[in-house]
Length: 459
Image 1 (tube, rainbow, N blue to C red):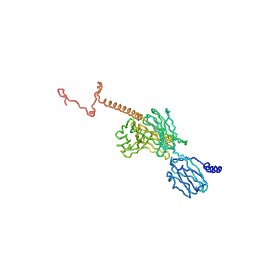
Image 2 (tube, helix red, strand yellow):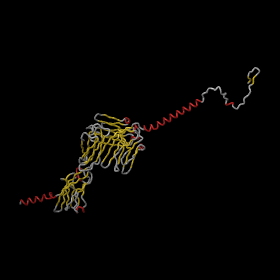
Image 3 (cartoon, helix red, strand yellow):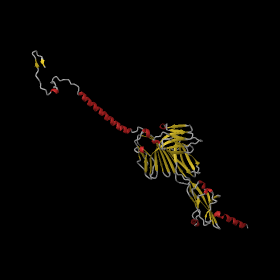
Image 4 (cartoon, helix red, strand yellow):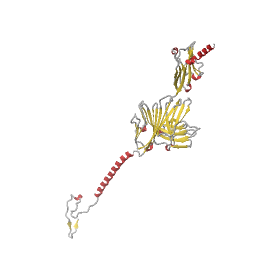
């Protein structure tokens, strides 16, 4: 009797010992197939723990007991495929909550079989952003899962290790931020930040490079570029900056009569704008999480809000971005802002070098930003251009010959005037030369002189 009991117990746990278990990865928000093959297909049940995911028997789906979390998101193959042994589950619009172990139960009238599928969900890195603020370079990405790996490299080398943290979004995804303290900012630097998913070999890299140059009215600026990407070249001007820690607010001189800012709620009011200022404004808020909002203005007055927080200090920078050049290598479409058409040349679409010329010292000194991106890499290059002695070479080339020509002309005029004046000066008479004849009387005949008896000349 004891032997029989042991035999029955062995048979009861036999399906668990013989069951198969596989691990798969599903991608966030995409459809995913949980594979399962069985020769028994009269009754099919899919479970996740105690939750009923999907049921099939009597030749059709039976979803009255399906957990509400899976309503409208599951399906089995068509009946002909089921009869061939394919009892896989299609799970639509996969979310982080779908992670876990699923049981595939398939049975005939007399036999049954169980298989298990261990599901992990991944939201891969799609883009990486990099910014610099004061003494901190920030690298960030959002909408990823699980927590990725962040790698840094820099020139000059950073003295301090980076600090990386993450926050959860409403969809249970992660917003990852990595900060690198760099101390005092050099005029020339390069920072590279790479982020990759734990099980992914692909690196998504953001590079930030700054160089400061002083030129006259012509400059060639680099922009990393390949045939497979596009880039935007912008000329940016900081309109407003505000630091909540010390309540310090700075507004650029030319914008003081156009900007009103409310630190309490981040409201920015712009007014009295001209046509050239009805473009894109970017509000950058630096807190525990870097936030950027953009707004395109259509009229000469608008009001919008920059994100602010009440529980921590924040910095706000309002930037007026003018897109100078926009190029897409796939469509070969190149757009240059009208007033820059004669100032910008795009000589090499392989290297992305941009040549600027005929610049104005007051209007065109500032920061030029090149943003270039591919599927895995984003480059951001800030170039501070300080224009000195604008068009000096051209001015001298014109002014010096003009001065010489003017000098020669004046000397010739003086010489001619002197000659003319000399003609009016009377020269001393030569005692040996006969008296000159009046030209007006050259054709008159000389008449004899008559005198009276006293010797007086008679007229």
